[in-house]
Each structure stands twice: as structure tokens, then as C-alpha cells.
Amino acid sequence: MIIAGRVDLDDLPRICPLLSRRTNPRYGGNQTRVVEVDGVRFGGERPVVIAGPCAVESREQTLEIARAVKGSGADMLRGGAYKPRTSPYDFQGLGREGLQILREAHQETGLPVVTEVMDVRLVEQVAEYADMLQVGSRNMQNYPLLVEVGRCGKPVLLKRGMAASLCEWLGAAEYIAKEGNLEIVLCERGIKAYPSGEYSRYSLDLSVIPAVRAETFLPVIVDPSHATGIAAMVESASRAAVEFGSHGLMIEVASDRLDAAKPRCDAAQAISPRTLRRIIHFIEARQEQLITAVHAT
Ligand code: PEP
Ligand code: MN
Image (cartoon, rainbow, N blue to C red):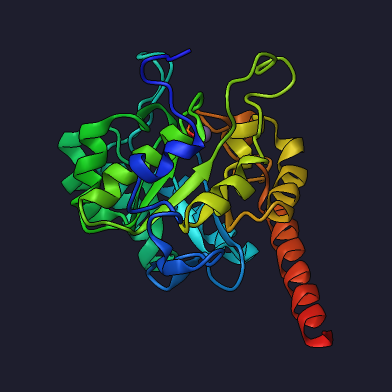
């Protein structure tokens, strides 16, 4: 039966000739093309950890969390200045002021910053402040936005659409690559499956990681925070993601001070800086084991 528009993995050489290993063998059978963001190497020697608040809510909150995640050993800072919210009445982010706060947090901590751009008209503005632009799950197939971030001269973190197939996801990445920007990191953030929402926010699709690595040379990371929606699951989801070959993690963190204000978005999935520290310890210890194992053979 022929169905219009249906694609599968065999169509990848046609959908994404620049990014498919089959049509672009420059990176060999299994090598990853390193994407460097201000010295942070995705697809390099060890998994990268991006951490920070869901949203930039204030200068104090963001600087506090930036210092805390730096202290926990994170490599990069995240935080939304423009937030995609289900309700238009919910907090939408601080906009340009949020970007300025992120810049200040970068200047103080040295952590490169990734933040979401939702609107094609704001790509230039966000690129002025951010070291890496995030395209969110809801915008993965916003093709004009993908073209524009492909032209912005900054690395891009492309989150997987919440119901996107691997073909659709890599097709979206190809839109960016086609504009001459190969500085793309993919991010699995959970997909909508039938039971999603019953016992976790989405369904964390760990099996996509080896598939991504087999089909393309782009680095791929995992966001265990949005995937699970439950803080108590984030640590084990992080470990599992690394075991599945993830090149990094993006994790939402909130202050654990007793008098700290509750985050205005995604509070239930935010972990403490101390838990983040444990996750980073796990990555470091695992890395040492791998190195020891290589030397032993
Ligand atoms: C985010 O990372 O801030 C976010 C909104 O995630 P997603 O696009 O995956 O829902
Ligand atoms: Mn969030």
C-alpha cells in the first residue's frame, strides 16, 4: 500500500543527505562530529551537562541557580527567557530582560548559555545574548524558524518534537544544516505515547539514542526533566540516558533553600543542586572506569 507522505529510515539519504551517515561518510561508521559551544564539546570526551532553571524569573533566582549549577560541576547554563506555555495567561518569560540576566550569569560564572527562541522575528535578538539557540519541541517543525537559526551563526540545540519520528527529527535538523550550519545538537525530551501523563509527563525514548547515533554523526543529548516531569525520576533517567550513549544531559534545577520561591514553571521536575552534583559524579566515575578499561586492554 502506498501512503502519501509516509517515510521510513530507508528514506533518510533523500531526506537528509547532509546529515545521514549513508550519504555523508566523512565521519566514518560511528564517529560523532564534535559541536563546540564556547569550549564545551558535545560529542567529545565525556557527556556534557547543561543545567539551570526552567525559566529566567528574576536576576536573583537566575544568578543563584547559575552559581549553584556551576558549583555542582555543570558545563553550561540553561533558562528560558521566552517560554512556550500551554495557557496564554501563564508566565511567558521575561523576554529581552531575561536574556540580559542570562548574559550576566554567563559573565559571572563563565558558563555558556543556551536559551529557547520561539519566533523567527527574534532569532537575531536571542543570538545576540545566547551562546547556543534552542529550538523547542513545539517548534521542531517550524521550518521558517529552522531556516533562520540555520543562518544565525550560532550552534543550535534541536529538541525532538513530542510526537516526531526519527525521520521527521533528522529532516528538521537538515533544514538547519542546509543553511550552512552544522553546529547542531539533538535533544530527546520524551514523546507522547498512549500512557503519557498517567505516571510520567512524557515517555522517555531511550532507544532513539543508539538509532540517532547509527543514522547521523550529530551529537544527541537527553532532557530527563521534561521527559519525566517528576524530580524523583530525573537522577535515574539521567544515568540510563548516559548508559544508552547520550552525549549529554539537560536538566532543570531549582534552589533548595527553604525560603526560596517556588519556580513559576515546572517546579515538580526541578532537582536540587545537590542531586545534580550526584549525577555529575556518576558521569565522572563512569568516565574514569571507561578510561581504565581502555588502558587495561
Ligand atoms: C525547555 O527546555 O525549556 C522546554 C520548554 O522544553 P520542550 O521544548 O522540550 O518542551
Ligand atoms: Mn521546563
